[in-house]
Amino acid sequence: MNIVDIILDKRYGRTLTDEQIKFFVKGVTDRSIPDYQTSALLMAIVLNGMNEREMTTLTLEMAASGEQNDLSFVGDVTVDKHSTGGVGDKITPLVMALSSSFGVRTVKLTGRGLGFTGGTVDKFSSIEGFNIDIPKADFPRLVNETGMVISGQTPDLAPADKILYALRDVTGTVSSIPLIASSIMSKKLAGGADAIVLDVTTGSGAFMKTFEESRQIADAMIRIGDRAGRKTIAVITDMDQPMGRYCGNVLEMKEVYDTLNGRGAQDVVEVATTIAAKMIKLAGKNGGLSDEDLLNECKARLKDGRALAEFIKLIKSQGGNVGEDGPVYTAEPVKVFDVKAEDSGFVFSMKTNELGHCSVALGAGRITKDDVIDLGAGIRFMKKKGDPVRYGDVLCSLYVGKNSPLLSNEKAISEIADRVYKAYEINTSRPLSIRPVIDVLGDK
Image (cartoon, rainbow, N blue to C red):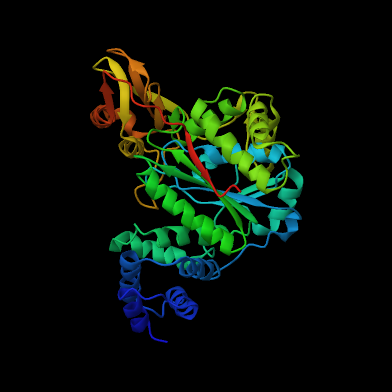
């Protein structure tokens, strides 16, 4: 088999055979196919697409290119959750705690954040003593004891995807439904869960800017999951404004704790309970409750302490320090600036991606994978879309960690604050409201 022939087939819009795709993924993994030829095929896929079978084969071969987790030790249906990311996305800790309170067992492999999309690993790492690098040999014990384990992804999980993703990032081949869907789903399939719930974000702070794009990606991933024998549900959620009241690692984990104490923002509660309910249903732990009653029961458990107890159990099981007032954090957020309204009216829109970039400038995220995060940095949002504002009202507050070099750099803070203010649009009319959960696909 010849990689040039495979490139030419896809260049001219032909359908690739399973054997051709297997040859390609093997050559990518063992580096026998040079990057320039891999990039040529990626561009041909961007231009001419892939059908459902091609996408599924590509995904399965990428998943099989390295280590695949065996979760048979769980002895029950396992459900994984994945988010396409955004600003203030703190849903994973909440759905783990909620689903565990129903008896769902979860093995969550997750990554560190890059750019303004925060990583769940970084959020949990902000808790003093929490061990995010759990050896696979300890998974059965932890799942048996607490029902949950969360750990960083191993380098051997879907290695072909890591190579392809790095090339796509520098060759203008990121925006492709088959390539995006296969990248996400290859890691989910290699993770070993029996079923998958996808949080597909849409809007200015998401990778997919429009609902139609998000729906197409969600449909593709559902089809891949179903063909691979993994029941898959996609929840399309709003990321046209930050999720909840905070972004930043310690700040978000504090908001998680508040939410588990019945003090959650409405959008966080709606998204977390919707996703948790789908996970519980897929695991067969809904106890005969209707979808509406299950959703209401999830909301009740955010208030009555049952989900909170599971969250505390998870933290302690992995070495995290919990005090009388909740988890103990490794960084202390310090407020450095209040961004105030210079007009009266309503918050009409928020450039969520720019707000995310501003949080990175404060230190809350990475620009390169080797950057060190300021876990105390972030933004608190007092005003969001649709909220009325008067001249002088605080729109949001900027935070850095108590050891941040920005504490002595007023010029840099002022510049970031100016960018944050420009990310807000204040208008005399109120915008149309959009529900945090826009649609649910694949829940048959």
